[in-house]
Image (cartoon, rainbow, N blue to C red; front, side):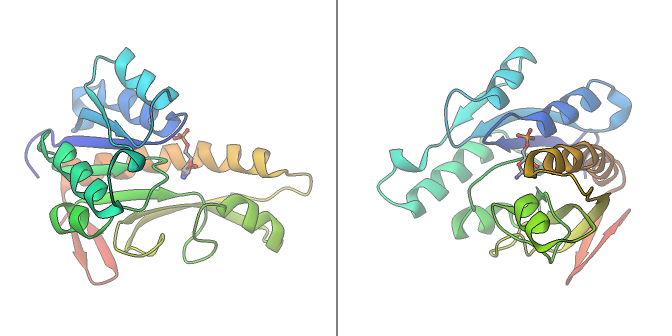
Length: 204
Ligand code: GRF
């Protein structure tokens, strides 16, 4: 990794994970900087957060392209224009495809609000609650072609309380998730990392 690696962050929603990264990057000692924020939709708080921080934004909507594969290539082109050293999917609710992964595979991480390999997909907190687990959490992983299946960088555990709803549980997960994301992305930036099969070693 170069000094102060360049992060491109992709979002789809409220962008609280993005905000945590923006706040961390305000200190040069953190070791990374967010050079652009992209989204798959307009008018989201995630993009507004980037704009307030003076960071360039871009949007690539699936519906604006004649196929998913053209969208995937366009997204990769838009990301590539900012020459990232690491791409962070922070609440980005689309699966990236082959074209994207051929360029950024091994350099893209995603955060999932469950303890992989349990409860992959769009409804991690609801599925964990429904199953009745007593602990759940969040997982940071290196994106591969599967749904939340990539090699695990870090995990954080939170308790499930008896009176939790999906939203109270997801909020508790998000507090831990943001801390994990900031800590792990900072270490990846400062120390480097190696992906060896399913094992990810920081400080590679
Ligand atoms: C996070 O819990 C993320 O893991 C999930 O959606 C949430 C996004 O939150 N996929 P935010 O947009 O960062 O606030």
